[in-house]
Length: 148
Picture 1 (tube, helix red, strand yellow):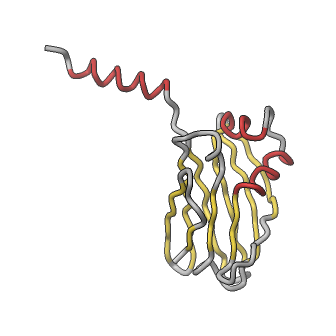
Picture 2 (tube, one colour):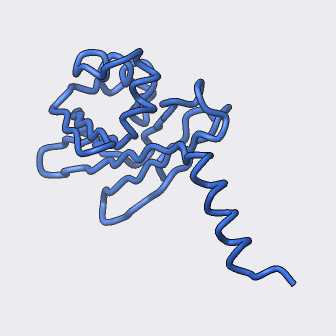
C-alpha cells in the first residue's frame, strides 16, 4: 500500500513545476470625487516576459494601456493614468486612476493581461462601488464584462 503523503508530495512537486498564472485588479470607486483607483498585482517574471526584459515604469504602463480597459455605461473609454508602481519581492503593484462621474455600475471591464502568453492565465477583477463588492474572472477568449 502506498502512503498517502507520498501522493501529496508528488502533487506538490508537480505544482512547483507548473506555476499559477494570475493577476489581480482592484477597482475602488470614490463617490465623493467620482474617481476610480485601479490597483493591478502581477508576478514580476510574467510581466517581464510580456513587456520584454526589465519592467520599466513606462513599459509596464504601455502594456497595461494595451491590455486593460474600462468603459463607462455609454461605451466611452475611461482613460487610465499611472499613479505609481511598487515592487515587492516577486510581485509588481501598479496603480492607475481615472474619473468615472457616473460611477461604475454598468461600466465594462476588459482585463487581457498575459492572456496571450499563458493558456492557463486567469485575471481576477474585484470592484468596490455603491456599497457592493463584485468579482469578475477573465480567461483566454473572454470579451469585456459589465459591472452590475
